[in-house]
Amino acid sequence: MTIDWHYVALAIGCAAAITFALRALPFAIRETIKDSPLLASLNAWMPLGVTVILVVYCLRMIDLHDTPLATAKLAGIAATVAVHLWRGNLFLSLFVGTGVCVALANGWLAGVL
Amino acid sequence: MFRFLFSPATQSARRSLRLAAHRAGAVWLGLLALGMGLGVLVTSNGLPWWLAPLLSGAVYAGSVEFLLVGMVVASAPLSAIALTTLLVNARHVFYGLSFPLQQVRGWGRKLYSIYALTDEAYVLIANLPQQAQTSRQMLWIQVGLHLSWMSGSVLGAWVGATWLNGVAGLDFVLTALFIVLAIDAYRARPDKTITLAAIGAGGAAAVLAGDAMLLLAMAAFVAFCLARHALAATPKKGQHHDH
Image 1 (cartoon, rainbow over the protein chains, first blue to last red):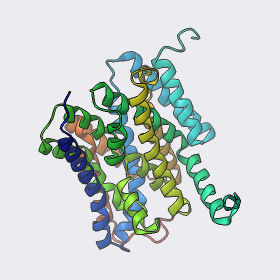
Image 2: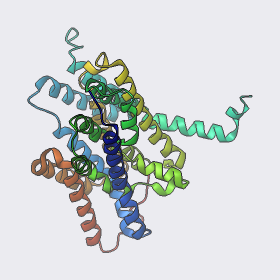
Image 3: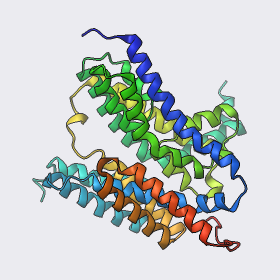
Image 4: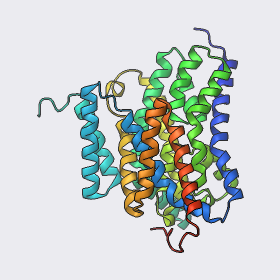
């Protein structure tokens, strides 16, 4: 296959520039509300809110028609929450949660259960 | 000759690295695995392997890169590539409002920190206690995420569609990350109003906007924050203390 490298370079450059511009823009806005109570409110509220929205997004992406994978993910969520409430260790929670999901999704536990 | 390894500056740098690994190590491993998926996609589309690190290093925004590979192979017009990037990444326009960039020392580092401000970097750093948001710690977390993603894409391009690519459910690591950090964030600052507003914004956007829900949800949530701030005449002193 022949590849137009000029085009590929432009495509990558274009996507990179737009992504950077989107990430940089709010810092310019923030300069104008620096030291205002609004910024303090946003600092206090946004991390929790954004994280919760990303959770909702991930939950929505679970395809319930793909029953085995959906079951594995739901079990992974249960394991993640349980281990995290138990030990409160980020690494451990991710490791166990993802491990449970991957093991179930690939049928590695079929012989055990 | 290895004395520099024991100098106070190096020790402090190593301590930051250790702290960053403790915070983000599992996510680094996860991105390594997910990056492999991108590498596999690059070579299986007949593109040379080195395009994988180039793409993952330069654009560095997970989901858009997967779309880019397909669009580049199909010779999609640049306008379509620009529009797709704009729509998929527009949610990032909100992250900078509450990202502690002021902690990062030096212009070059600040630019890199903005450049590498992905979803994972935002949630891992913004949810850290304030005293842990140091320049070194933040940069190590971001460099680690970036390098893991890039090395994963190289590995995937080299080993191709063999082992890890056949493993289903690896992307769950990001779901688990967001869940765990949401639990931690809520415990550090149990704000029911914000939690419900975020669930509401996310749920409504999921119904209304489908796969493009993130932008709408983030916009609605930030609008809610602005309204809440405007309605609370004067926020009580000490209400926003950090833990």
